[in-house]
Image (cartoon, rainbow, N blue to C red):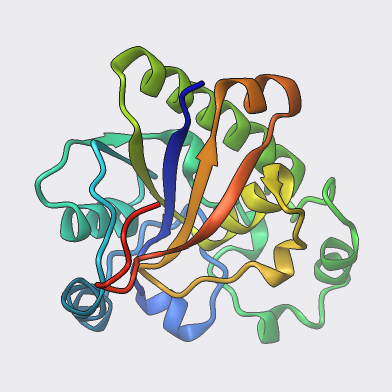
Length: 210
């Protein structure tokens, strides 16, 4: 049975990331520092040799994809946009601490939504549909390895929802330009809606690909 590899990679740093703001749908570009960090990673590490790159539509992701995979087709995947933070968008935790709605959201679990925003459960549903679509395209086009450039929240919750071994999303963190290597088979996905988390990406130069 064929297995397929997906590299989930977080976008580079933006001004809002450096300021500790909640940004989901706001379309921030990379900072000069963010771009330079990605180029430094390209010099120091090895990124996977993928056949296609899928990207969140937001500029911080498409720009990251173009830097890390300049010779690959980039396909926009709306399903991998960041969580919509609603009324909390563009604000820091410190700014929100006085709001009861903020505390309710933090304690509310998968179904809790920021005012006018999106729940983690809704995020996981659309991520599921995105992964399902991409797996079908990989099978149809005989691709064995693709990358998805997306957001920290998408990566953490996708691995928490569908990854094996099971991890708490609070334990799943990756720096800008880094992420996780996944292995998936059609049988694993159909029977358990699951993928295996193999390790980290990018690789050390002496390491071979998974």
